[in-house]
Structures are given as C-alpha cells and as structure tokens.
Length: 498
Image (cartoon, rainbow, N blue to C red; front, side, top):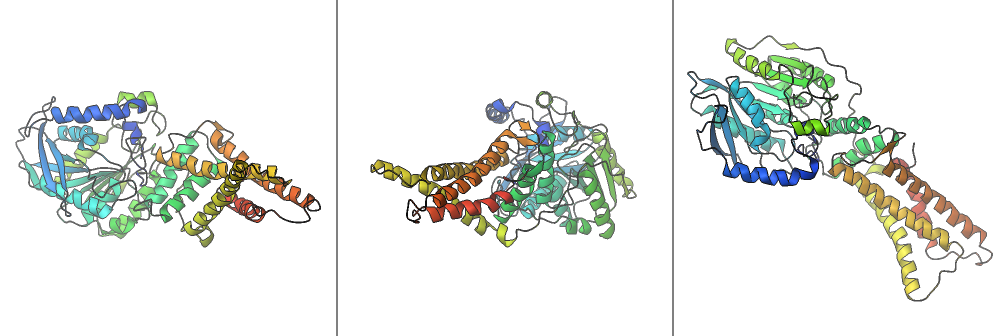
C-alpha cells in the first residue's frame, strides 16, 4: 500500500497502503478462521514438484535465497509440455504480508497465455507495518528472477518482472538494477511517493462514505504527516521518478479507469514524462475501461461491495490478453512507445509537506503530556481528597471537574478514533451525518465543551475572588494553561473547525 497499514487482504489495503479488498473471498468475520484453514489445507494438499493442476498447468515448487540470506519459497506455474522456450514472468506483491497464493489466479491466467510464471511468498523478516525496505524487496524479486531464468523450458533472455501496487515501486527498482530483466509490467503503479498516494487513497475511501470538511483533512493529511515524521510510515518519501528515468527495458504500465488507490491520470502522465526523459525505455501505457487498482472488474466505481467480494474477482476486460500479447510481441522487438488518454480523475493528490516546528512531534507530545497531567492530575487529586475525607470547597471546583473530565476524554478519544481508523484502513468510521461521522461529531462537541468548561472555570473563579480573598487554588494555573493550549491544538486537529 501504504505504504503504512496497507495489509491489502484486510481491506485494499494501503498499497498501498490498496483496493485488494476487491480480491477478498471471505467475509471479515470469518477471515481469521478461513485463513488458518487455507494455510493448513495448502500444506496438506500442496502439489508435488512437477505435478499437474486441475486445469493441466504444470507447477514446480522452488526455494531461493535473497541477498541477506533469507530463504524464500515459491511456485513456478507454466503450460505443460511446451515445445519451445517460454517467456517468463515473476510476480511481485503489493503491500502487506502475502503468500504466493495471493497471485495464483494471475499466475494461472498468464500461464494459459503461454508464459512461465513464478509466484513466491513475501518475506516476513524485515517487513511489517512499520518496517520495510524497497531495496531489499527489489533484491528478493531479482533472486526470484534468476531462479526463473535458470528454469528448464524458459528462455533466460525473455524473463521480466510484474509488480502491482507497492510492487509498482519495487519491480521498477529491481529492473533498474539489472540488465538481465528483459521487460517490466506494472499494475496500479505510482510515480508519486507512498505518503502522497496513501493520502489520496484514504481521501477517496472517506469521500466514498460522505466524509468531508475538517475530519477529511485532519485524518488524510495531518495524521499521515505525523506518522511519517514519527517514522511509522516506512518508505513514505520514496521517490520513484529517478528509477523510472533509469529504466531501459520495454515497459507495460496498466491502470484501471476506476482506480481509487493510485491516481491513474497523474501517474500515467508522470510515467510518460519520466520515461521520455530517461534512458530510452520503450513504453506502452494502458487504461483498462472497467478495471480497478489490481486490474479486476470493479462493480461500483472502484470500491468493492461485500457481496461482490465474496464471489471472487474477475479480471478486467482484455487484461490477460493484453499482458500475453505484449510479452509475446517483444520477440519482434520493443514496440513504439504509446500511451492512452489519461482517464477522468475527480481529485488530484497533494504532496505531504514536512512538519513545521509547531507541528513537530516534540511539540505534539509535550502538549498531549500537558493535557494528561493537568486533566488527569486534577481528577486524581479529587479522588485522593475524597479518599481522605476532604471536600473541594472552591466555587470553581465543579466547573473544573467537568473541564478536566471532558478534556481527558476528548484527547484520548481523538487519538484512539484516528488510531482505530488507521488500523482498520477506514473500515470502521461510523455513520456519517452532514459530512461528519458520529464519533467525530461527538469529539467536536466534547472539544467545544472543553472551551466552555475553561471559560466557566475562569469566570467562576474571577467572580468568587472576593469570597476567596483573591487566592487561586493550586490546581488553577496548570488546568487553565492546559485548557488554553488545548484550543490551538484542537484547531490544528480540526476538532474546532467545520
């Protein structure tokens, strides 16, 4: 995906950060049990090397080591008893943990088109939500590529790479590092950095359910910038353009017209400009009229419905034929460069700028810490006094209690809500009313309550000065300081904006 939190099997998810939810075959509630069952079944029923699949495709299990010594496992799927050397294709995964079976459907379709295909289990060592290296993933792809080149029945001079979503960053990087890669195919690839792509994808998912206004900006921009600065979005600022400019292999780039994860019009134009400036790669850039992010038919404008997910995916019209004919056509030499007309794209992606000083993690952590100390400290102090049998007699105490309670709930509620949305890749947002989700409306009301509570506490204290001889309780400066700083913090996060 995403890039960050892009476990695509869960929802696209993210690469990206990625509409692979369209590929999901099971309901979310049963997913865990089914994945376990599939893992057990595939272990027991794995065909032996050289065995035939039900549709008479040959398979062979292989193992190979990457540059860091990690051993990866895969399967070569090819037409049986081929009378001539076949072109070969290594499939490079998108974002998230994945096994070779994720792309079994593509492998079998391409094999039926006369291509030997290698699919492999993605590494788990050094790859997670918060850790990944495109350079290492590219090395994995090149190791797989060498295995396929050495396979009997494969023309070692006609073996290329195919990458989808996150693989659209990885496969070009691998190809740029090896003259042995004969050609390159990308699906749903990006010419923009992962953070920018992820922000665009998340905006589309929220707009899809009717979200707009401050919540949309805060979640898709403010929160992602903070995650990037915190180092929790690996490869967030990766720049694919220098890699595209370095390519000299023939390239086929494919996007779906209904792409909602990687901006198709922008990316197609970026690819044209970068490849034209570059090392002379021949390119064919295509738009699939009914395709989504992963070149599957989309039933509703790029987003999957639960009923459709459970029926399994169908390739976009002409996709497999395009890949097959393009690869086989390379035997006559690289085709003349061409690009389809960019599709309509409702919104454009926006680069995520670095944080300014007042947005920095240090400032954010300091403010949240102050809120917790002030709000929780006041409430804890009240509990201790009550335990000791002491009563808080100051006239502003009741207003201060509500200020501290609402403030604490708002701070933790805001962070928790955004955290849940990130973890679920927007699968959990709540009902939407007038462009806001109900949880967000609740948080905005609470944030306004903090402001009202701060004003009430200050006014009551001011009016009671004569009764208290002008003295301020010890908790007053810290609590009101926290409430005062809460206002710009809440404005920054959109809690006090429409």
